[in-house]
Image (cartoon, rainbow, N blue to C red):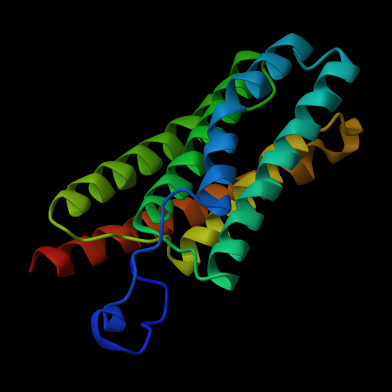
Length: 197
């Protein structure tokens, strides 16, 4: 996607293509690279060893902050690229799915939550890939961003060694995230039909 303004004068009238080698895309790539470390910390903590769980929580928060930063920087500096539009949501899904699977593995979260969210996320990602092959780039919607924020909040609460009386509020937050995830998934399917038509 062209983000730079065309310059006046002859051959420079055509807008310049934004390079994929920029800070927002680097932050997105780093988020993907650090996912294995995050997974190792969660499994090492096993929901019992507080130092490791706090470390996992810290890495998770840091990675989610990069998600906010890369989008803000890209829009503020005109560095939005097709690569970023695709890689950013993929990085989000990779981190989210990894967190859920690890939380399932240590018995901290119900498996059904992971199943519902993973089916939705992988389905939408597949649709994005098909649309991209047809030359259509599908950016994250407003509802999708709300979904991501709710998932991040819920997962963060599961990762953080909170007092037991916060277990029910944590579950409620995650249930809301699941509902929003399913609803936005349906909306994507409706949009997909419009694209196909």
